[in-house]
Length: 161
Image (cartoon, rainbow, N blue to C red; front, side, top):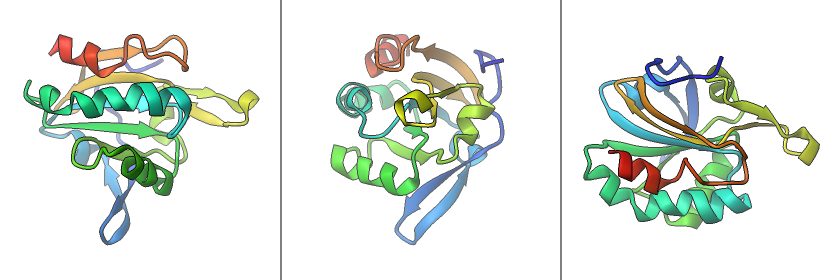
């Protein structure tokens, strides 16, 4: 059953790029004791993700954080090299944290994975956004179609805070 409001984020880990090289970051390190906006994309650099979803969070980062959010993070089923390249190409440094879910383990743990093999993309994450407070989901916005940003965008999150 997919994660829902009131559920705790399951234990998992992400691969991240650091100045010292690739490292692991646990869900506890991301969420424990913090109020986080997390959004997920089917794929870095893909049309909707790169042109519609991520830009809203970059543009609204300061306004979202001004509402008491400690940080904004994005996850996707891409390796950490791609996620880091996407961060650098999009100008998101210092505004959005990029969390690689390379094997889709986090997406599967949330029951937010879908099979995009028909398009040559393998298992991907559904597009969603959530507000997580101390590891508990307080708000969840899941898109019906992966190519749309209608309920999971930064503007929706900002209005709800």
